[in-house]
Length: 402
Image (cartoon, rainbow, N blue to C red):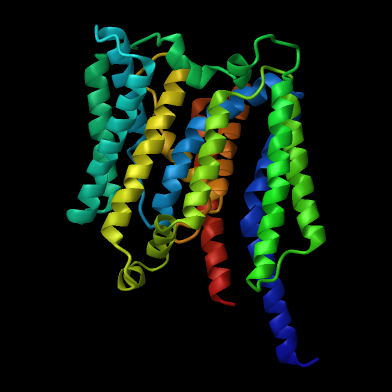
């Protein structure tokens, strides 16, 4: 075996390891954090009640992270989504509590989503047509939304929200579909079993598609291990959630959004255009991609998910305050980066962003259970972001040298 062959094999092995670490790092990081906090809290962290609360808390971050992912992939950013979430929540609470309009919860939800999308359209127009950097445009909007929130609130919290509104942030699927409550949510088992079957069918169809189009599929052993690990995770969460009150509606919404936006990213022209713009903006333009239209579309998507996140968050806390949404954009951005999105653009997945956001929620939840001070929490989150960006830069550097 000559020297060139050894070098080639070494490079292939290194590339395989880097690809594996990049793809599954967030899963290992999440597992380590969960086991760490569970040990320090004597099992409290993995109790059914806390898992349910942690997932419900993470839903808001994860919804924002879905929209943020597309912006980061295309080389943009949104620093205003947290302030916008607080602003739209304050508007919803003001309409519901301080006015005599008597609008239904559904009408208020539509107003929230509409305002959120218009606000992000505002950001998109400045970025595309005024050629303003996304950082500056969205930072300016952050201050505008914060100021508007304080003006509406006048220093006071507004609430409580109606039960019909709070259902999106506080209720569970059993509350909607099960008339007689039991000590264990069997509806959760049905949903988990359906999800597991769908997972197996999806993996089987993906494998067949790879073979059909001449691509080398994963080995049977690797596919079996993937299904086994994911199946075990689904079963564990189903048992824990079923032991409490079942699946939160907010978690179910997040699941639907994750599936829907994953499909959009991988199977629609709009999704492919986003990745094309992020990989090479000039090349995308030359190939016929309308970069301005794509950018506007991304910010409208960000507006939509921010509106939904606002509804879920306000439904969970039941009142609007001036502190709502503070630093949420940081958790969304960090979640995307920890979840595998590249700071250089062109790389990232919806599922990775969601897992990264859940990772951030686990950090918040675990540190709160341990009574860690706010100052120390900021330190930890800062190092997490620094480590995530450093790892991204390291991976890029290693790949460029291969």
